[in-house]
Structure formats: structure tokens, C-alpha cells
Image 1 (cartoon, rainbow, N blue to C red):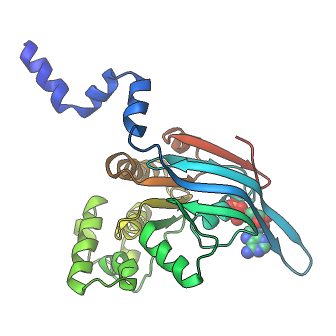
Image 2 (image 1 turned 60 degrees about the horizontal axis):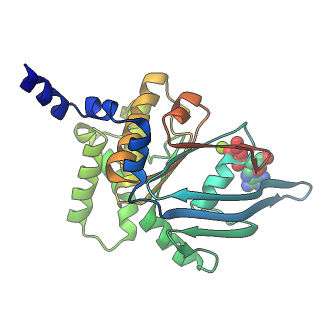
Image 3 (image 1 turned 90 degrees about the vertical axis):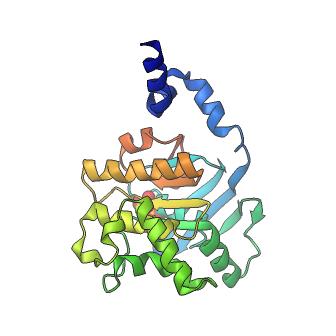
Length: 257
Ligand code: ADP
Ligand code: MG
């Protein structure tokens, strides 16, 4: 009887985790990962049109550790996407410095920025951004086209990424033949195919119902917990945010929490 119980503890990961005190779990997770992955110093972003000047980001400084899963919340228009795009090097800050994995990005040329982005970062968007004319596997391969990988390597990596999101059986489908949740899983496969260290997700569950949203969240948590990928996720959903390590709240371009 005792033996059987012991065996159950060993085979059931959930059970093992549930008997470890919460503080010990935190230590386990961050022990080897206390280095910084992202360092924002006094970031400002001003958008100027002919008539209006918008201070979209107002003096934000933020450190994100390697292996951390951070969520960002705040009302519409408060600067969440702008902040994510600046961290993702898709947009330039008007002021301030951003360091990724110890490298200052301030003086990189556009070409160097693109290479850095392609190697280190993976992006996921609310509306998936898949190319409907390309099959699922070809969508996933896209980020690899900018690298010196062979067609065979690309196919293998795409198949592996699709397996990770549970879509091995949809490789030859077109995006229009998939549900919203499946499309987002393809987008995750595309984001992880190049082995990024950081995933940036802008409201990845925003177009999905609760069940599908939770499935996406499960996959992101697995990428974070198992592979140690740093994740920064914008969300409107408190329940999703609660499942992450830390929440940052924005209001009118400023960090308020
Ligand atoms: P959120 O993602 O929190 O809804 P955004 O980061 O998209 O907010 O936008 C922050 C502010 O910056 C908003 O007031 C928005 O209107 C403005 N903004 C965003 N992008 C641009 C742009 N390309 N040109 C001008 N203003 C912009
Ligand atoms: Mg937004």
C-alpha cells in the first residue's frame, strides 16, 4: 500500500508540486535564472501627427528576468502594444535605452535589429497574422527563410514546432480551414520555430472563447516552465494574468503597478 502511494507521488508531477511549499517553488524556478533578459531604462515614446502629439509611453523603466512570465494590463490606448513593440524592436523609443540579454540595442543598424529580432524574439498577435494562401507548415517555416537553413532543416523544425502545439495532424491544411484556437496555435508554432529566448504576445487570447484561451495559455505556460522561454504578454483577462509570474499595469503611458 505504502509502495503504491510513493509510486503515485513520483509519477504525478502535479502532486509533487502541490506538496512543495510555494516559496520553495519560486526559488526552484528562478534559482539559475536571476540574470536580466530585458532592461528598459527611462523609455519614452511620442507619436506625432500633423495636429496631435501623443505621449504613448511615459518614462517607463522595467527589468524582466530570464525565464520570467510577465503580463501587462491596462485600459485601451494606455500604451501596451507600443511598449511590446518597443521591447520587440519593431518600433523605436523616442528616448531611453533598451538592453536585451545584456546587449544594448541603441546603436544597432536596421539590418542588425532585424537579425537580432529574427534570432532572439518570437511574436504572437491577437489576430494571428497568418498568410491564408500558405499551408500551415509553410506559415510556420516563414521565420526560417531569413536564415541559412536548408529546406529539409526548415521542414523538420516546422514539424517539431507544430508537434509542440499539438497540430501535427494539420500541417497541410490552410489557415482558413482551422478554428481560431488552432490558428493561434499555428502562430505560436511560427513564433517558436527559430528557438527564440523571448516570446512577445499581444492579447493572444483576445479573439478566443474561454476554453480556447485557456488552451493557448497552457501552451505558453509550458513553453515558459519547460523550455525556460521568457514571455511578455499583454492581456485584458485578469484570469490569464493571474497564471503568470508578475503583472505590470499601465495607465496613460505610465507604469502604475
Ligand atoms: P494599447 O495597446 O494599450 O491599446 P497603444 O499602444 O496601441 O495602446 O496606443 C497608445 C497610444 O498611442 C494611443 O493613444 C494611440 O492612439 C497612440 N498611437 C499608437 N500608435 C500610433 C501611431 N502609429 N501613430 C500615432 N499614434 C499612435
Ligand atoms: Mg494594443
